[in-house]
Image (cartoon, rainbow, N blue to C red; front, side, top):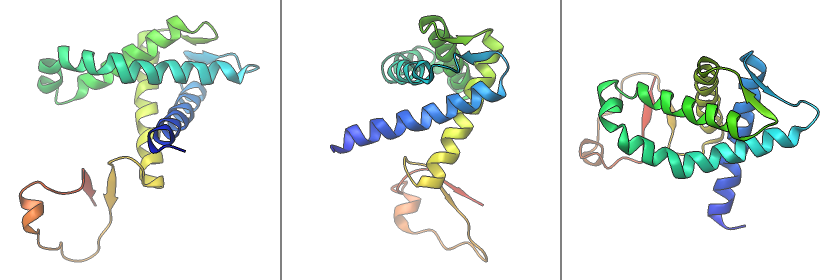
Length: 150
């Protein structure tokens, strides 16, 4: 299987799990429980919107993203989730506030799934004792992705 296809399928699975959790936690997000295909179609449409429309929205709203320290990205994600609810008939998002909470839950679930599986650029490291001295490559910013040290 080509690596890009494998990455796409993995992101689709992660998004599907996130939307599934959001549909069970947020009362305003529904899908026809008898037809799980609706959930797959909704997450596929969400993935396509994230791939093609989200970068444009991020670029156009860059001043707001910077001014709000990235919080506006959550608003963009909520807007895309709300749009999916309008496009896919068997998947409903009642209000924008439900889309906001759903987008937050999807982001959290995606983060934890990526950390647990080691996929994506997200890394969490737990170290005991003194922190190690930073190497030259760390000081220059040539590390291998974002790291959360706890």
